[in-house]
Amino acid sequence: MKLMLKTLLGFIFFSFSFQLYAAISIEITEGVEGAIPMSVVKFESASLPVRMKADIASIITNDLNRSGVFKVLNNENYPATPHYSKDVDYLKWRAIGQEYLVVGRILSKTAGVLDVQFQLLDVLKQKQLLGYSFPVRLRNVRSTAHEISDLIYQKITGIRGAFNTRIAYISARNNKSRKYVLQVADTDGFNPQTVLESDEPLMSPSWSPDGQSLAYVSFENKRPEIFIQHLATARRSKITGFKGINGAPNWSPDGKRLALVLSRDKSADIYTMNIATKKLTRLTRHRSIDTEPVWSAGGASLIFTSDRSGSPQLYEVPVNGGKPKRITFEGRYNTAADLSPDGKNIVMVYGDRGSYKIAQLERESGNLTLLTSNNLDESPSFSPNGRMVLYASTQGNKGVLYMVSLDGQSRHKLSDQAGDIREPVWGPYKKNRQ
Amino acid sequence: MNKIAAIAGLSFLLLAACTPQQEDVDNQTDQDINANQQQQGAEGSDSATPIAGSDSDTQASVFEQETLTAQQLLEQEDSPIASRVIYFEYDSAKVSDDSMALLEAHGDFIAGNGNVNVILNGHADERGSREYNIALGDRRAQSVRRILLFQGASTGQIESISYGEEKPAVFGHDEASWSKNRRVELEYEVR
Image (tube, rainbow over all chains, first blue to last red; front, side, top):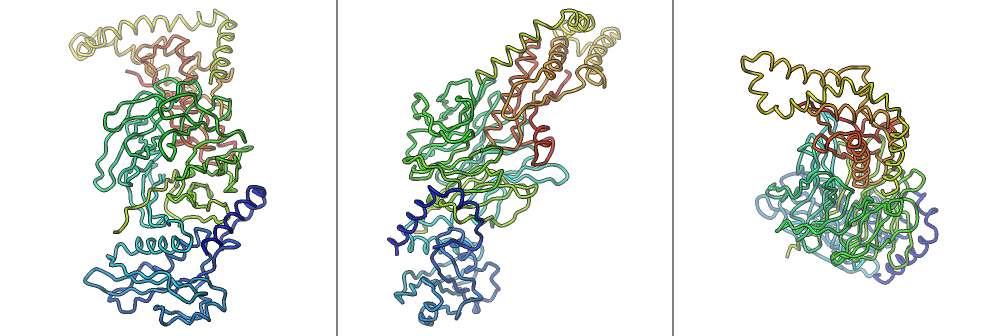
């Protein structure tokens, strides 16, 4: 199966690099051609003294569908509703073309603790691929469901799942006055938590590599300043407050430095700051706009936006300084890069004749693929496994979040939330349970 | 950046060269006096403040009148500085000829009133990436700042802050809205 999937993905990539426009004009909401058919039966929870609010099977179903790799059958079409592998009649599932089946149940362990059990079954081979039992507190059920999605995804694709991670974003709300809110939420948009609320703009959140802190820009003192905030304790500190721009903080892979943008009353330039010593190192010195730095995977270089050629394009500069090298050549507007964790792909905002879409640049081949088809898409951010891209789009008069698979085939809007939502950033993997 | 700065600078020099000197002289009569008074006021402002509250009526009234003059100019509906917003083309920080005349008037006013500070709030339309738009709004504010400085305003009087696309004047996803959002707003403060 692993091999088959690889071949399949290879084929999709191949065909996409030549037929971008045809492919992206199709808005797919029901799953992807060639996606793996599977079923996730609703978990049994009859023995519980309370009714479960979170539906584990539907959380898993949504996760797997969002990935574009799987097509989970609508549960109205299920031939049976088994909860244990021993009750599964494989032939029934095989008859309706299913390759995998997930069954599970939620039992009561001790007071306030559940025992969530699931099994991933191979329908063709008629055997169990995975079987787990999780002790879970009631409030962590959604997180556990995402954890199960990760295990299923990894078992079948061989790639680590990134469903059980967090995203951060900015939400602007118009109540009596305008409010800007920095929030973190699960990858399906559920469980939002407010990190900071302000009457003045908040911008450009960046996760620390350990997932414990966020750097961001706040205008709370009527000027842009960069802050770092520890999420669990809400303790925060101001990192920069220079004249002019203080913007675009981006955490280094080792967690010790921030790349950032300062203008100090001249043009915007790229700097790095040692967080412990606050020592600044200037990396660009040009009268053009230099902004939006992101670290390469190993931290050896930074990719940034500059309009030194006359239009905004992406450049790469070694972290110890040197001459920036231009890396985008197609189109008049390429900005806001994010790098895949393996460094092989860049996603960015690609502007063309007044429309702004998310594009993917394969670094080695230089192939450019459009991943989205709206007119005002921005802020692309890779999932930690590099298979999905989170971005902001516009719907009516508000910003909404979308996820798109790296082949551009599967595109899903995140659950509706209050406010005008923008600048999503995907957080790192959580530490393993073990 | 080089190009834009150079063009803006050049057109400004040309304008300055062509502008009849008389216009300056006409405007100057009032403002020169203001400037002189201002300077005195500014130099003595630390000591002037307590005096204003003391029993020396003449000193206090002079000080108040000065403040009112700048304030009055700012509040006048038909004054040359009544308009406080400069608009820009897409992805550009070039000040148009029309706006140049307006900024000259603002520059004269700031240069002539040492007790006046101005914050240049730079903005961009919503299209494209947010941090690039911050830099674009900043570049627009810097264009305006250079003109004001050339007119004689001092660096200490001017602060520039870019909000990028974060604070649109008009909410909307069309050129009519966008053209209103690509702007620098002059926000005055009289000390």
